[in-house]
Amino acid sequence: MTRVPQMQRYCARCGTRLNNYNLESFCAPCESASRDERQGPPHLPPAFWQTDQMRDALATWHMGRMIFAYRTHPFHGRALPQELVANWLGLTQAQLSRIEKGPAPEQFSKLIRWAEILAVPPELLWFKLPASSGATLDHVNRQDFMRAALSVTVVAATQQPLLELLGKIEPTPIPSMVGPSEIEQVRTAAREFSSWDHTYGGGLVREAVSAQLRYAVNLLSAGCGKKHRRELHSAVGFLGHTAGFMAFDAYAHTDARSMFQLGLTCAEEVGDWHLRGKVLSSMARQAIWCGHPDDGLTFIELAMVRADRLTATERAMLHAARARALAKLHRTEEAVRAVGQADEEFASTSSDNDPPWMAYYDAAQHSGDTGHTLFDVALDGRFVGEARTRLKAAVTGHTAPFVRSRAISGIKLASLTMATGDPLEAASFGQAALVDAGHLRSRRAADDLRELRMFAEPHIRATEVEELRARIDRTLVHA
Image (cartoon, rainbow, N blue to C red):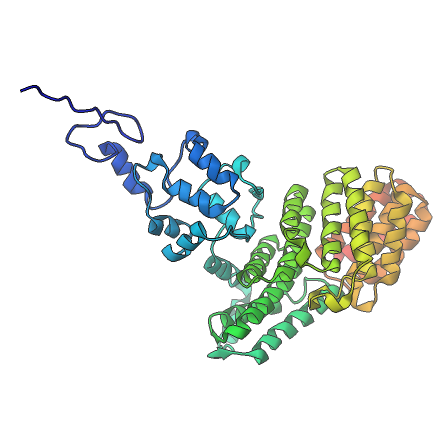
């Protein structure tokens, strides 16, 4: 009898010849490695992403189709179960099934998280991943956000005896059901802390807002009627944003990022595009301030997705923030155009359409935000007069509740005038700004004062300038 030779088979992963008795797709070492990797996504070779199947899926700009192509890729030997991949992504099998078969997901924070978990090469994506500077949008799941927000306070050991006394105070109980009354209390707390922040800076009551945020986050675990769930998440997200901005102003940057992430998660959980835009704007401002303008630009681009759902005031705010990032990147022409776009949007604003947290963005704030952008441009010798005009308008227009904004714009006006104009006039602007700065506990304002002191250095022979420097030094001692 003629023996029919068996067709030789090879390992789907490493290409080694398989034993005739091995009916699997992998050799024994690769099968063992595969089992270990099932605890998380496997390490993939570059060629994995170059197949027609993967390329076609990525070209659809549909994350669900990309995940399906990932699961069914020949590299795995057999299709990965939905349950397994869903577990990697923090989803249920049913959720992943809907994502693969349904409309393209729109929430960029989720797209970014899934892309990072699966290690999709950034150059193949249809959206930009934030740089790995600690300012990613959604690198942990919602429960991790909550834990991060609830553990931001560090206490010195010398305070422990006093804290032990406070530990005997019973915490405020969480109601079994949350309704309009509790939601309004969270909103009121957010408004009050935001008002305090604008007037005195973020350095004095951060502990209080952190405690209030802990309580508010716990409300999310209580019972809540479906019709109130969206309002509850938006209120807690608003408070998280307020706490985050106060932490940013106090240079508690890690705390600020956790709190901003909390606010963003709450907004995206219920599709609150207005809150989402505001939080991303503040995340951009923090990134720019920390020397990462490219990250700031990324956050603004994410915030501008479906900008038609935002009000004209919100779009003006975002264009102004985008202009500031571009100016820091020395993309001057684009920055100036972005200022023009911000002006066009602001000309169409109507406070009747704006959410409550946008009440601060009035003509003075718009002048200040765009004036800060043109400050950087003016230091290079362009649009000096326009920058001064806008900063002056901000100083004049800011009312008593917005002392910090008035002080910072006044300091910037003094610095610009010191660098490009009459140092005596600059000293006068600086003295006026110090009146406001003396009431603040703001690390941002303190750094702006140090910058003003640096610009004053070449003019110290003038008595007025020397007096300004001495007063700055005294103010910084108490900052």
